[in-house]
Image (cartoon, rainbow, N blue to C red; front, top):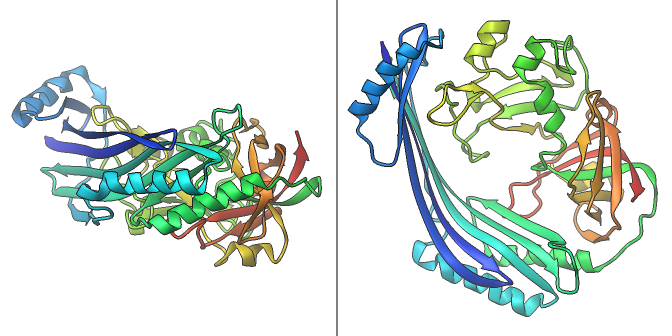
Length: 410
C-alpha cells in the first residue's frame, strides 16, 4: 500500500488601503495536510487544517479506502526535487512604512484620484512525499500591490487599476507606473479609426485565453464535446502562435508539480506549437481513459481526489519588444475589459471599459468605451501579430500580446 502526504501552506501579510490611506495590517498563516492511501484500485484520504496528528490521518485514509473511491493509477514515485526561493523583497519591519510612503506620495502627486485595495507579501509552500520514493517540495515568496484607482469626480466604483507582483519591489518604479496610468486616463482621445486594427492585450489578461483553456480540456476532447475535436495534430492557428502549459517556479511563481506529484520536463508542456494543436491537458485519469499524453495538469483541494484542471499557461514570445512588434503603428491597448466572452463556435466579443492609445512605449491617452470583436481562429491565426518579451514595467510580470481585431465605439 502506498501512503502519501500532501502538505500546503500559505502565509500572507496584507495591508489594507482605503481612500489613499493605510487602514490595517492583517497576517494569515494557514497550513493544510492530507494523507492519501492507495491500494491499486481506490484512494482514501484523511485531512486536517492546522496542526495535526499524522498517524491519525493515516488511519483515517486507510479506513476511507472502504468507500471504494476509484483511483487505479500508479502514484508518482522515485523523484526527489526541491525549489526554495525566499528573497527578502521588503523587510518585515519596513513593510507598513513602505505602504505608508506609497500612499503619502500618491496623496501629493495624484490628488485628483483615490487609491484603494491592498499590498501583500505572500509565501507559498507545498510538499508531496510517499513511501514509493517521491519527495517534492516547493517554497516561494513574492510581492503583490493592487490598487483600484477612482477619479475623485467620478461616480464609478473604479476607473482604472494597477497591479504589480513578483520578486522585486521598487518604490520609484511603482509610482512612475501609477502616474503613467493616471496621466493617460486624464488625456481623453477620440477613436481615430473604426474596424480592423492592431489591438494589444496584457499577457496576464485571462479573457483572451479562456476559450483555449476551455477547449483544450482533455475530458472535453476525449468526449468529442470540444471545439477542437478532430484537430489534434492539425494546424489550426498561425505559424507564430504557440501556447504552453507552464509551471516554471522561476518565472510563473507557481508550484512545479501538480496535485498528483507529476512534473513536466522543464516544468512546461506545449499544447499548441507553431499553430498545430499537439495535445490537450490531462491528469492521470483523463490520460488513461482517452489514451492521451499525461501533462501534469491535476488540480483540486488538498482533501479532494485530484482532477483535471489547468494550472497555468503562457504564449511563446515571438519578438523582444512590443514596439518592434507594432512597427511604428499606433495600437489600442485593452486595459480593463469585463463582460466579454466566446460563443460555442469561437466568436469573441467584449466591451472594453478602459483602453489607451499605445505606441509600444507610452500610453498616449484614454479612448472612449469600445467593443472588440474577432474569432478564436482569427485572433490566433492570420490576425495574430505576436507576443513580446518586454514587460509593462520593470516591476510587472505582464508582457504584451498583439492581434488585429474589429474595433467600434459603444
